[in-house]
Image (cartoon, rainbow, N blue to C red):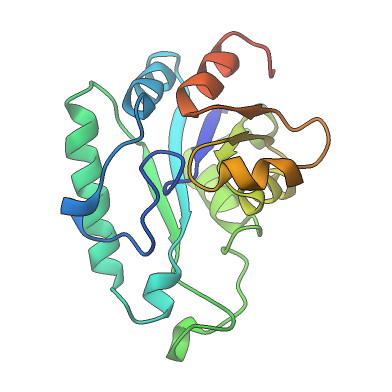
Length: 186
């Protein structure tokens, strides 16, 4: 089985913009493409798992999220980096419209996206990591049996005070990835 690093998207890979779906508004956090390339080079699967309640709220559709991810892929390729798979939750239990207003097992902090990624890509969750900027990312990693890590980018500077004991917190994705590769969190 393979090892993976599951990554939250907004606030972890790219600059946090509320309800981001337009490619022209996408901007990497400094160092995140390099971090993803380092993971690729080290043989980790890189899987993005992102809550997208803007779909549930009717602000954009699933096709818009897929277009943004294709844009990310093209931008990452310039750095020699790639994401192996994207998973997103389009639901919201309170603010969703129509079929999107449900409680699901994919919305973080639930672990459905991580478990689906693990099943689809033969991932050993116990040997994998979940990196994000919010407590729900840490909780999703714990729920899936991954080793969670938080970054202080995005919402992380505020949310890092709430992480469970022994959860490492790093300045950004590049610092977290360097720790993974140095074996400090294995």
